[in-house]
Amino acid sequence: MIIIRKRGVTITELLVAISVMGIMFSMIVAITILTKRSYVEEENRSAMQQNAALALSKLTRELMESSYKTTTIYNPADTDSPTGIIFASARNISDNNRFDLDPNTGQCIWHKYVCYYISTETESVGQKALYRRETYINDPTGTTLIQPSSLGINNFVTGGTGYSPSVIIAHRVEDLDFPGLPSGPLTPSQIGDKLLKISLKLGERPPGGTDPNSLRNGMIITFSMNLSN
Image (cartoon, rainbow, N blue to C red; front, side):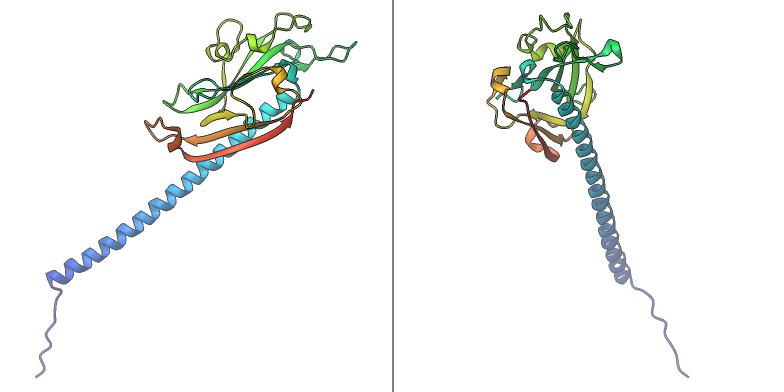
């Protein structure tokens, strides 16, 4: 008579199997999380890049319709000071935003000043954005056109009477830079007949972070144009 003994699983073997399965499950979860995080970061990066490219396109398009003679650039060495650019626009908002030219001289009739500047978002603590704001010129004939340097970028940042509401053009923009130009407020005489480079520095600050060097998904988008008109 043959006796067959059925051998069961010992506690030790069971614990080893559970440990191996736990390690494998942890690895699978970790890989899944990393894959998802990478996908989300790439998606955010792509959205930021597209958003910034559209913002830069809008800015340069408006600049091409303006003149360096009406332009002031604020390019401070201090990164905590407002950075931006102010220029005149011949778009007449009271006439369906038509580009206005003097029929006799062919010159632009300036109706407003436009400012693009960097400021902290009110919706996101510590995160910056690219803003746009306008103020209207009292004399649209252009004969008594005020110099943009007398407006001051802080006036646009603060706003108030005579200024349109500020509009965010692009989120998560840390800096609006003008490579190759000296720091400080630059008047039209310092800007004219130069190849103007405009750069947007993008990035996401970690929650509670204030250090611009710790940005996630950081990138720089640059556009060059000539302001010789």
